[in-house]
Length: 368
Image (cartoon, rainbow, N blue to C red; front, top):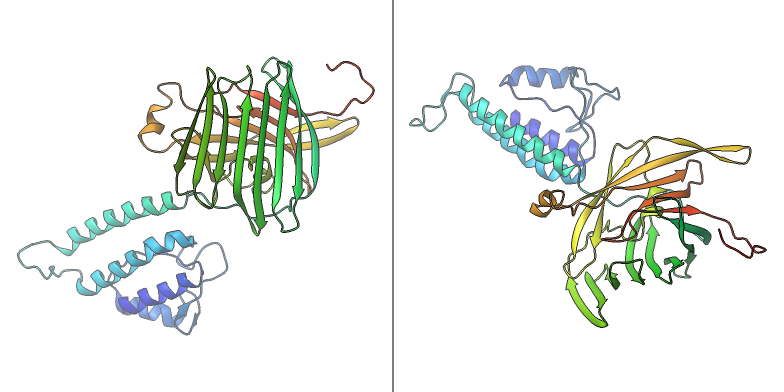
């Protein structure tokens, strides 16, 4: 009976239906009677259907598993069912020499299940591609970049076009008062989900610690970085298996499509350098604020983006001052979410700058 129950659970999970998970107590007769009488919900063929309410009849909240979680829990369900088939309360394990009672076995089994639950929860936090809620199109916006004191350091624009084949091209650039220059060209698709195709960044001039150019080709996993120091150029090329949710150059686009009710959304980011690595961006909603345009008020949604470096490097980074600062972005909250403000570094090893919207001044002779 337990094996058939596990098969029913597998079929149910395979169809994406939420079902409550119950620890086996060995009472096969009562379990079968509950299934026949509908205590666990109605049955259709060999698939259990649960009640639509937030809680099942037995008082446990249903658990909906993601696809990646099913690959972990389904083998566990079969193992638990098969072990329970062979062992009953009051009986010894088949290995007579072990001397382990069912009570001891159950304690160990529960510990095993608890460990796997932790693993499943961690799998649920893996990065995922963000679905397209707002289609990107033709855009041109004017921007100003300021330091922490509010002084304008550079002016630029953000241009977006869509090619005939559906490829979207973003071009973000700034020209600094000291002659420095920054530009990022990002190409991506938006067929159901946003997917990065390539990202190119160039920075040069005294506003940056190091002049560099970087190219990321997601399809091939090729990351090329060219640096210039003391008149000498150095080019390095590396290859990484880049995840589908790589978000370089897509932050402003993705935030318009993030679910603001989600506690946290995670995407991947490539730290392009001579020794590139893939890190995680953990995005969480912050406190809303009110902004005014003349007499009109708008709500602005705040997002906080924290960089998570995995492995030993992530543990050491805060200790040696290498933990990247948090990024803050504000969007106008409406049916047409629009970029409002950015606060953070443009690239690695750069100071925290602030980017805001501005308006052209065609008749003005001096720029404030």
